[in-house]
Length: 278
Ligand code: OAD
Image (cartoon, rainbow, N blue to C red; front, side, top):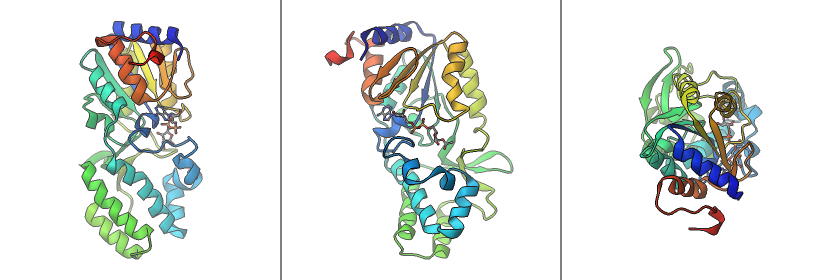
């Protein structure tokens, strides 16, 4: 860890009036949810050409429905079982000290579960069902509801029930319609960003004086523009990731770095060098 960067980040937090925490899959990795592009990531196991668009998914479902059930199970089950980790909790703690907005690409609802109150989910949420014709969220799930859906998918993915039974059972648990009008509130490749989250995200990024970018590869646009956008408006940008880039990179896991950083900025136990341990 570079001590100068650490001190720069602590001082930026201390003097900030409005912090945006911009998060990606990395912040939820320590809650057991795989990232997309790491060695064990989703897109390694389920190629995006087949699974990252609605058309691709539909096409795959027509020929290999079991594979799609397996993919959906792999998305739903870790989120159903997850709870916030030290990184999410530190972000929630931050808003006790400074105005904080969270802009997340994650669909797992873990920032809200941790207690963050101003969260903008720009790629949507697995816990919401949307009516696409009215662009309206029509139902919100609890995390427990997802566990039941995961169980039904598991039955199918492991050969125990027919496709017809799967769909009939799923419709009891999940209000999709056959025309694809009611579906999970998820942004797949090629979709417009989730609204009003994206408009709100741009507004808070415009207003912030510090953006913490946490656990994102910055590979997916337009989300990846946000740190540059903040910097262009004069905000400081700090990047927290095992492989960080940018002007003020802090290398490490979110669950380790965030509590220490926020502790050093606002708490009593101050470590000028995080490698010294606390
Ligand atoms: P990626 O999988 O592209 O990147 C995950 C990032 O998290 C990498 O930079 C890792 O180094 C980092 N990371 C891994 N473990 C970490 C930890 N414990 N603490 C902190 N960082 C860690 O995921 P995203 O950047 O979130 O979009 O991906 C962006 C979008 O690509 C997703 O929202 C999704 C995906 O396709 C859509 O599907 C539209």
